[in-house]
Image 1 (cartoon, rainbow, N blue to C red):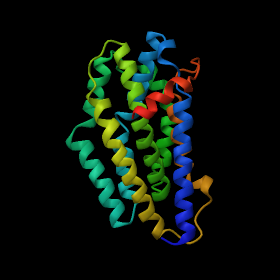
Image 2 (cartoon, one colour; image 1 turned 90 degrees about the horizontal axis):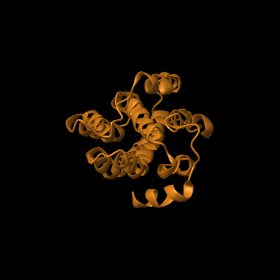
Image 3 (spheres, rainbow, N blue to C red; image 1 turned 180 degrees about the vertical axis):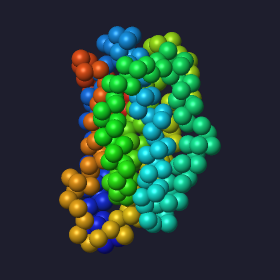
Image 4 (cartoon, helix red, strand yellow; image 1 turned 90 degrees about the vertical axis):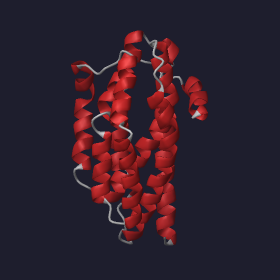
Length: 228
C-alpha cells in the first residue's frame, strides 16, 4: 500500500479505536442500574445484534472486491453460521430474563433502520470500517454485558465468553480486509469523515442501548475493558 493510503488506514483505525473508547467510557456503573435498566441494556443489545449482524457482514462480503477481504469476511460468516451465534445470544438473553420486548425493539428501531439503509449502499470501505468498529466494541463490551447478566441471576456465559475472544481476531481480520480494499480504492479517496459514516451511524445506534438517564462511570468501565 502506498504511503498516503497507509497513513489514511492508520488514521481510520485510530478513529475507530477512539470511538470505542468513548462508548466504553459512557457506560453506566452496573451497581447503580436498576434491575429494569440492566434488563433493558441486554434486551436492546440483543434486539440490535441478533437479527442484523450476519446481515451486515453479508453486505460487507457483497461490497468488497479484493480476494483477501472476501476470504476474511467469509471465514467470519462461516463461524457465525456454523456455531449459531444468534442462537447463542438468544440463550444468553433468555437466561438473563432479558428477551427483547416490543418496547425494546421500538427504542432502537429508528437508528437501526438508518444503519440498514446505509449498509444497503454496499460501500466497501465504509462497511468494513463499520464492522471493524462493531467487532472491536463487542470484544470490549463483553465483560460488562456478562456482569449485567450475572446481576440478573444468570450463569449462562457462553455468548460473552466466546465473543470476548473470537472478536479480537475478527477485528484484526477486518482491518486487514480494510487495507486490501484500500489498495483498490482511487488515489484520491473520500474525506475521512465520510469514510467513517457507518462508524458514526452504528455508534449512534449503540448509544440507544444505554439508558438515557444513567450516569456514565468511566472509572468502573476501564478495568472491565482491560480485562477483555
